[in-house]
Image 1 (spheres, rainbow, N blue to C red):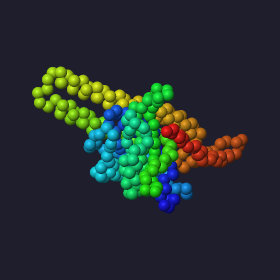
Image 2: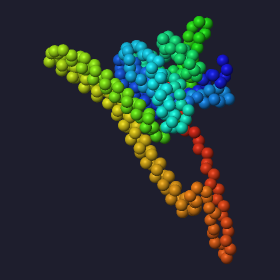
Image 3: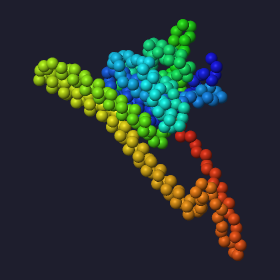
Image 4: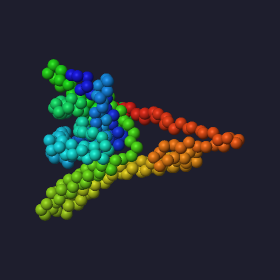
Length: 301
């Protein structure tokens, strides 16, 4: 395999990471899945992948220990990638898949490894992410959530897991399309809930059955709000506060600049004239911006 086809590192935005966690916590009984959208970056040491969005397909066959990615899900995710590419001005594609493991270990099963290997036939840098939820550490008795980023490789006839190092990078603001995708998913899950509720109440249900179904419907609706809608609202509130502070800093900086310098409409800086005794001296000002340090944070697994 050429080194340009080898996936070396993955960078995932904190926005996508939060969406993955919310999806994993959404249901305690069944697995959920999504497709990862991002771009590949060629480096001298290999290829890195930057994950910036999710495409969440409606659940077809709902099972406790298995989730499927259908061909129509890939087509829909490609359409989402095209929309995001136009909005962000980037070349985004479907570059991986994600699913949850409720109440079991984070490590991929043999079926997961084989599925991953099949997906890598489309793109050698295609990656997989698994998030385990609703697990309790037997030592500390604390709830924990783990994530792993992996690929598959066939060695001596057996399919093995290859761990891929991943990093979490901060997001300045939530994109409208990414927000719309997860809101659409909440609507899809709510439609599933209503469908199951109506099916359970078909026919002449007795009062006790009706009361039980009403209680389950209410509890599942509250659970959906607690695990998805509420954290998403908190994230938006945090970003709003951060954006407000940033706007205030930029306004203060702009006011300071307007006092010190004069600008043409095209942004070029004019020279200022300062009196010096009876003569005038032209003062040149350098406006080169300082290089910012990366805010990349490595995510523990």
